[in-house]
Length: 179
Image (tube, rainbow, N blue to C red; front, side):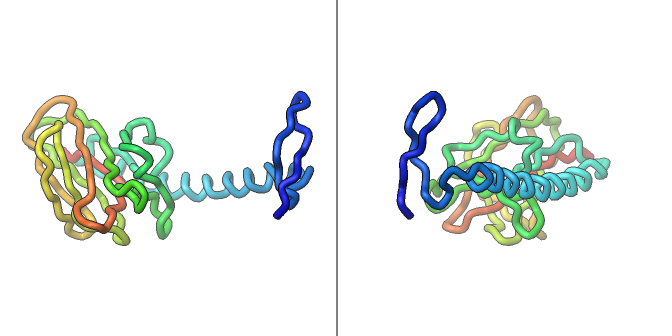
């Protein structure tokens, strides 16, 4: 592939590949159309997870970590926690091969006796490390792709999720369950 200079906006020279040339469809519109199609799939998958969580009467709050809607509620350490659609489910991975120690954090308004449910992708690790309210990290294992942790604290609490071992957990959602 040969790189050729092309005249840019306001006379600036920019570099562009010969494969794309002056064809705006190939340079911008086709990739943008592909991205929009991907978003349609991701929105539908996220809506499915959200609908299922909203239908549960015991769930008082939740975050879909692999989705787009709750992105502003997720605190990600570094660039190590990317999201993707995995077998039709939105998943956010805790860490990756370049940034293996990434963490994810969410906040909930907690009452004593609430339970934190972490839904994990079956393709990833079924054990996570969890820090509640800045406390000690502890190992939490999932049963049936869901890790359940009873909470003994109250107020606005930060839950931070990390990986345990070399396999990265994929988090679908984190829900606050109140009996």
